[in-house]
Length: 381
Image (cartoon, rainbow, N blue to C red; front, top):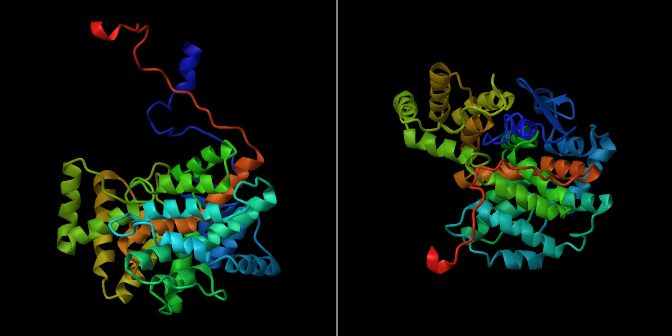
């Protein structure tokens, strides 16, 4: 029995904190350093594009010029949604529905228009990965159009994923070059993050050798939760509730007194700061000032400073991304779908890594229920 207990030590009812569940070569967190395939996120954020990061995560190396162009060409060929799929998507209730709920259904429906949906070969999985990654932004923007009674805008093949998202979301308004650059940076920063909840969900589903669409739907379902992808929405809702700089510090202290969570603050793995938050803090300063609403940055700084002083906790990536997205004119409830738009690159990498060296996940649970129960006839209960 003692040996059995050792299996569970440190893992029981703690969200598997600190438990190594698999080996991976996709991304890693070492203290305050996040790396994709061995490349520091700081380096990638300063020099890379989202499409280049997609190639890196999927192939374990940076692309050559011709390879990057081919990937862009492959993605652009799959941006558009099949007319029949779009017709069905228009029938899904979109008003008063959370975008992640709609997106989860939409991605699942996509598989019905993919003849290779259940083909498990490496080549077929690559083609499915291209389709899923290319169409994620188109789906999100289609939702925004449909719920507002508009016809979805078609993507442009000669533009990248970041440009097309901003273009389609704003109903065909050409986005500013600087805004596209900032949004592309956000996609790079969010592309993967080691064995987080949605990545683990991806791998668990893939480990049963279920298809890639099923694995990605599992990931979207996990990301929907407010403790994972939904945190960025809650940060902006909090900022708007505070509304003024003068109220910020007391607001946080009141939350702490009530033992309530301050969204976007703290992280299960980072103890000395999230490197992505440091990058987005600088972006937030600039973009909120440009939008004429620098107060969102100033309130964020006050919350950040108060939490570090009172609790020794630092912001995570959700904290500063909220004001950045809001200043780009993105609806608050679209923040989490944007996470999916970026993280699809990592999810695909995790699914493929799981398929390549698979063993189905089958953990154990330590029994805490009753024992030796005996059935009694219903008249005697």
